[in-house]
Length: 168
Image (tube, rainbow, N blue to C red):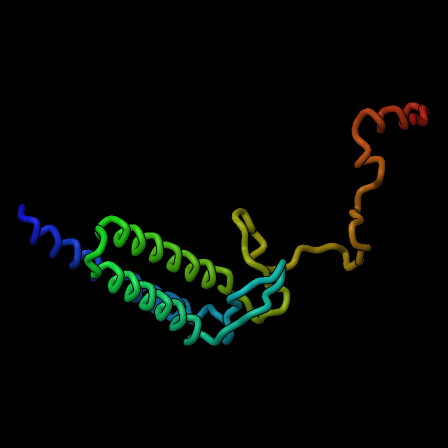
């Protein structure tokens, strides 16, 4: 295989990858639009969303960011001052996977949720599908838990207290 054929194959592969990732980024929110709210939560601060976008913007913004990244990599890769082959592929691969994963997690976090109130990003193993866990409606002061001080004291201290020894 000649050097020219290798370069052309790599260029075609990069072009197909760029177009494919852009298509996935733009189409993913629209594919699930029947199960998404009007505004998608796109940023979380702590446990509650503090940023949202309409569906069209949540689809368009990542695709535009991907296009900008791909164009920058293409322009820098065409400069002849240094070998551009390996890092161009690595940049496009990692950038595409990162943006596609972020888009998929945003869509997943917004599935079947009515509004922004009470929404939090989903974590592995969640089974409550975005609903808040019940706490009995009782608010606790910051830093306090529902368990007793004896529970946090450790097993040796609890054992002493159970048998009447006040300990230290």
